Length: 270
Figure 1 (cartoon, helix red, strand yellow):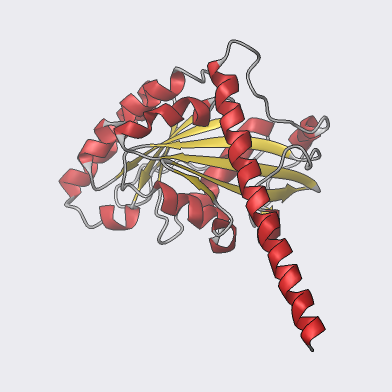
Figure 2 (spheres, helix red, strand yellow):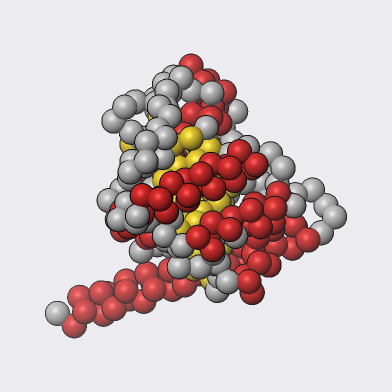
C-alpha cells in the first residue's frame, strides 16, 4: 500500500512539474514574439497548411464548425505543424464583454487552459472543416490605457481584428475608432469587424436611443470598411456566426450571410 501511495505522489509531482514547465514555455514564447516585433528583423509568422487553399472548394456546414475537446487548448505551433492557425485580435474598452465573448466561443473547458498575463488573455479553439484542422488563436487585450503596449503584439500577423463596444454604453462606441486606428498601425491587411456586445440589454433601451446607436455604429463600420455585428455572449447571439464569417472570408468559402437592419433584432451590416 505504501509503495502504491509513493507512486501516486511521484506521478502527481511529475504532472505538476510538467504543467509548470509548459506554462513558463508559453510565457517565454510570448516574450520572444514581443522581441521579434520590436526588432527590425522579419516579423513572426504563423504556420499554415500547404494544402489550406483546397478548403476554398468546400462550404461551411449549417450546423457550424466542429471543435476539438479541451485537451487541444493552447496551440503549440512547433508541434502542431498540420494546423491552419488563424490569429484573431479582440480590442475595445474595459468592461464591455470581450472576455465573456471569447469564453462563450471557446467553451468553459477550454477557458480553464487560458494563458493569462496582465492585460492580455490568450485562448485557442480548433475547428474541423471537411477533415482540415483550423485553429483560432484569440488574443484579448485589456481595455485600460496602460495595456496599449499589448496592441502591437496582439495585432501583428492577425487574420482578423475584432473592434468591440458595449451597445448600452455610448462612450465605448465612441472609443471604437481610436482602437481601430491603433490596430491599423500594426496590421493593414486583417479583416476588420465591428461588434456591439450585450444585445440582450440593448433591446430594453428606448427605441430612439437604439436607433441613434445603430446609426452611429453603421457609420463607424463604413468608415472602418468593416462588417457590423450585434451580439450577446449571454444568449450566444451571433458569437459562432462571427467566427464562421471570418473562416468564410479567409478561405473564400461559399457561405451566405443575410443582412439584418431591423431595429430590435441583432444587426448584421456589410
